[in-house]
Image (cartoon, rainbow, N blue to C red):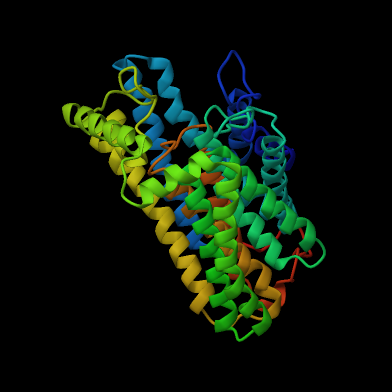
Length: 426
């Protein structure tokens, strides 16, 4: 039941505009997330005993912090101009309670790693399906230079695709049977990102892809493996970057021109408007430093959020909200940095661990992409929050797999005998 629910949740998160109840985007996603949270949190005390202490500590820390954000958001209903919109921050945190305990619960079941692999596959399939719908002009893709897919705004589509891209790349590098199909999937997601017209997320996605392949090359070099792959990777990285720019120029010339205006230091309209939003948001935060203006509130009648994660929480929930969201961001950043460093410079890994190591790198870049994108875009909105929590949950799972003895790993899906997988055990 839990596995089916999490897969349905993944499907619904890619179609928030279609998964609505009463006109509210993502309503079905929220209900599914709430159901997953109730199923997994109810048994979390049992799950926690199977977690390694590092993953258990991270889970406790981030979910406790998220719970404080929920409490502050609900309290802000008493003074917010639009109390209904405080649910924006609440919904975003609920996805954390839905995904992290759910992935942990699924992983300790018989054939748990195979089930987690299916979650990754579902993420990849949905990113490709959404990209293909955008490419052929469905789901809001009838555009001059921007497409939103089934999201409300093109930036949200860009965030989702840039977060999904490293997972596609990671699966591509470890797959032996479906490399051609996965290569086509990678191209499709890149093209969907181009057609979204989100300049920030195009840069984040392409740079993140380059970062993943760079880390993967370092990983191979450190283990003195596959010199041909290293050479191909070093040559392919700049070629892929130039090809991405040419694709953007061909399919979205306006976004290409605006991007180079920004990179050359020119005054692009989007940057001017963001700077104005940031300035207004900081002023509002300074005027209400202890309580903020209320979770999810509009900036006057100009914009629904501040287009920056930290500024938006300072504006809406004051210094306490800023401190809490900073804790979540720092915990996630330190954890992914530690996971990447362990993968790159840790003790020599045997061949069976290659898949796990590569998925750690892919999930780490996915989390990083989301955090970086939210400094210019969605401010941890409920439509995109799953693309932070789910890669973080996957990262925790694969990092737990790295802690297993080499003899208990397998190259693709790891199978364990007995009643539960020891993936997270001490």
